[in-house]
Amino acid sequence: MSDYNDVPVDDDAIKLGQFLKLANLIESGGEAKQVLSGGIVRVNGEVETRRGRQLERGDVVSVAAKSARVGGERVWE
Image (cartoon, rainbow, N blue to C red; front, side, top):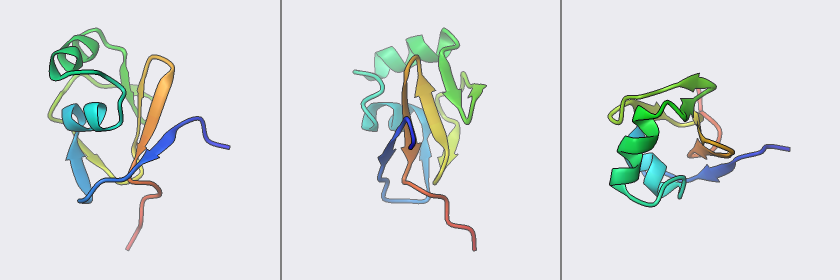
């Protein structure tokens, strides 16, 4: 069983700052700056500080104890 929620996205990619809000991992854009600069955001287990980082389907984003996966399973073609 996964310990994250799948968050559907319309495209195959989304910016980290947008995804944080979409996935309800943060409350506002201002909070995005704080959590990113604080080093508590992880993408696929690695610390990420770039708000504009492009996420792809299947990436897992974590903020503290909450996590979400971009658009569900990554589809390989």
